[in-house]
Structure formats: C-alpha cells, structure tokens
Length: 349
Length: 282
Figure 1: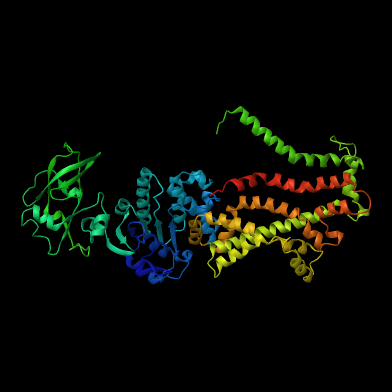
Figure 2 (figure 1 turned 135 degrees about the vertical axis):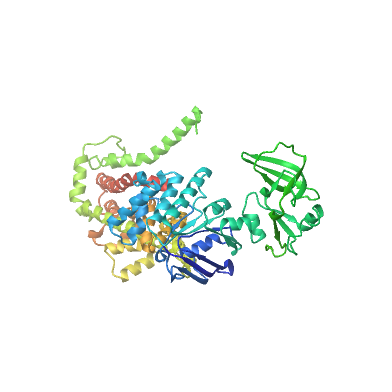
C-alpha cells in the first residue's frame, strides 16, 4: 500500500527522441489511475518507467516516500501484468505464481499459503499443475493477475492486460479487475488505448497525447468537460462532433450562442446531446439531411450532413427512429450541451 | 496433402528406396565383413551373408586389440573418444549458450563487432588453422592430454549463432517479468532461458557429439601416446599399421563398434532432437 508521486517525469531516448514530457501525477493510496491515449502517446513508456523497465531521464518518481528512480523493478515493490501475459512457458501455473516469491527467499509454507489464496480468488485452483499452453486466453490472463497478486505489492501496474481477449471475456475480466482492485485497495496504474475500459475502470483518468498530459480527472469530469479538442475527440464513442462556430452562428438565432465565451471558434457537440424532437424554449434547432442510419440494437447512429456543411456528423439516439435515408430531419439540443474550444490552441474556453 | 497419383507415389518410393540402399549398403557390408574369418574380404568376391567368425572377431578386437600394429584394445580408445566427444560437446554448449546470452541480452561496447568476430570463426575450422593451433597447444604443453584433444575444438560459432537466433525469438516480456519477479541476469538465464532452450540444446548435443566423436585429423596430430588414441584414429592405425595386409575383418568389427555410441546418442535423444529441429515452443 503506497502512493505514487510522479514529479515532472520525462523520457528522452538516445538520439534526442522524446517519448514523455513533464508528467506530474499524484496517485493516492488505493487509487486506480488509468492512463489512456492513442498508440505512441507514451502511456506504455510511462508505465514502464514506473515499473523500472525504462530508465527515467527527467524528474523524480516516488513510491510511498522512497525515491525509486534508480531502483531495479524488483526493489520497487510493484507487480506488473503484461499485455501478452509473459507467463513462463516451461513452469506450471503454481511455479509461475511462486517464482517471484521464491526469488525473495520466502518460506515455503508462506508461498503455499499465498499461491493457494490467490488461486482461489481468481478461480484458477484447478489449473495449478498445468502449463500455460494448456490454458485458454482468459485463464492465462488470470494466472498473470495471480502472479501480481501473490506478491502483495505496494502497487499494481497493468499494461493493456485485456487487449488479447475477445470482447465478451474482456468485459467480464474488466469487471473482475475492478472488483479485485476495490477489495484489495491496492494502488493501481492501468494503461489502455480503449476509452471505454478507461472510463469504466478509473477512479481518475489521465489522457495522454504526444507524451504530454492532456487532462487528469474523474471519468465523468473528463467526459463532461474535456479540457482540449484532443480529449473531446478521444473520449466518447462515437467521437464528439466539432462544428465551426462561424457556421453555427449562421444557422441559429443570434442570441442563442451568447453564453459562449469570446474567441470560441470551434464548438464541440456530443452525438447523444441531440434529439429528434423540436427544440423546447431556449434550445437550438439544427436541420440536416440523413445520409446513413446505423441501427445498433438499443441505440442508433445517424450520419447526417447539416445544411451548408460538407462533412458528415454523427447523432446518437437511444432508439432506432423510423426515418428514411435521404430525408431531412430537425435536431434539437440544449444550449449547455455546447463545448467551446479555441481552434488554434485546442484548449477549452 | 492428399495426392492420389499412384505413379507419382511409386516413383517417389523408388527414389527413396534407392537412396536408403545407397546409404545402408556400405554399413551392411561392414557388419557382414566383421563376421568373416581373415582373408575373406580381400579374396575378390565380397560375401553378402554373415560368416561364422562374429564372436571370435569381436572378442579379439575388444580384449586384445592388435598389439602388432600398435593399437591398444578397443575399450580404451572408445573411452578416449567418449571423453573427448563429451568434453567438446559440453564445452561447446556451455560457451555458446553463455556467449549468445551475452550478445542478445546485454548492451556492451562493440557488441556487434564481437558478434561478427564470433561469426567469422565459422570460416576458420580446425583444418584451416591447424598449424598455429598445434603450435599453441604444444607450447602450452597440452600434447597427449584430454585438454589438448578438446579445448581447441570447443569454440563454436554455429551453436552461438543458433542460440542467438533462438533467444531473439523469446519474448522480451519474459525477461521483464523475471526482472519484476526479482531474478537477476544469471538467474533468468538459469531458470528461464536454459529450460526454454532444452530442445535446441538436445539437438545441438547430438550434432556436436558426433562432430567430436568423428574428429580425425586433430587427434592424429597431437597424440603420440597410445593411451590417448581415439577410436577413429585407432581404425586408421589398424588399416595402415604393420607390413601385412590389413586385417579387414577386425577393422570392420572396430568400425561397427565405433559407430555404436553415436547411434546410441541419437536414439536416446531422438525425441528431443526431432522436436528441437522442427518446432520452437514458446
């Protein structure tokens, strides 16, 4: 149990290639932080710096109150779950779990107790004598988790642990990881490129882009008030629509946008913030032509072209409307649903 | 693949049977010749059926040797060959495992240079460097010793290269997981890398053992004391030694006995060996 403090962490590879710049995050004891971003954003590098698998070239990293910049991974009191599980193929499940403990010269009885306990928690008790190749993907995933659990570390580090599982198993394991983490209350750092995983797992979310932090906040904060156009586009699926303010001023009543700050020249609009009903008082109405209707069971995605715009935008409705492709529709939205951004800096205003 | 072309099948089998016959026939002749009384082999007509002297010939070879030609009984030579082959094999395997480990997992200055240096020695087998190597071994006083027989043959670029290729296919995460699990480099090597390479080690063991067993030129050069003769040399001595006609029946009996240990090694390691050449388990 410990907090993790990243103070201005940076990573520069040989040849002056910057991977991570000025990252400062305070992770409280027992908190689950999810690092999310597109591939190449530096999230894995950052996690590996915390793990000790990459050297830290700038800044200070503390786990608890120890500065661990120069410690070996094993000395940092962390446990890591790898993307491809990295189980030792020639060892049984039991030995996979016990290996790290044996290396710490732990008493045999204590190893046995911990392995049995972890195996029970993860329901892999029946497989302890098997080799990893005799297990399914989901079972291997559990063994990889078990290897982290038995260590009873100060912090768990997860490097995209669910990306090799099929969709159904992924949801199931996501729930289990969250339950386990809450029950053990172990500080956790979790890397993913899947924004849904990020939103559902995190106590707080860190959105990274180009090696820098774009925004830190609870999932709902980040979703409701994205700090930059990048976050707005990355978190949420389908992505937030970005409308030019000039165009918007041309199609709505003159005072309808008066609440937006000056300088807002890009307006974000979540697909689900529009509805087919006519606008009630104070709301806005946008007219569009329906180009494509994608029914998705409980909801539907409408790809539309607003009048005077060439690009397609997406509207998400909580039902499948009875409309024909090519027909003209009127969408209404609340004034508060608009997210004002500065197009040049990409910042929220 | 299922192919119902009968003519093709027939042709393929014919070619294969011919190939097998070409390989097996000399071995068969050797076995047959070792069972005949002296002189039969040189009479001009080679017998193709076993003769009556099998027991006697093998008894002579194993118990008496051919003292007249200066060859000791075969047991000692077999033992010498075995010691030399094992020393070469184990030496080669341990050195090449370690050097491949160093080259793949450590970043030291001139790493690539050293890799190529090792690789270059592939082009310098014993026969090419035999004079300077002999000089070195002689200066070190290792003539007529097991050290002299085996050490100069231990460096192996082939095995190093094969292990390097194998290590590079081992996922890097395994090494990282081991680091997180508190295993230092040598512990990782011992606990994870070597057990994973076991099929490759078995395959190379067979190849290297036969290589060591069949060494001819080198033992011939550096041993003058019959106590250090290897079996392959012994056969050569039997053929050329003495003034009389070579005693082919005894030579063939020795040849058959000399072929046994490599065959045993192959049989013993066969399952691992075939596995090691055809699949890598990850």
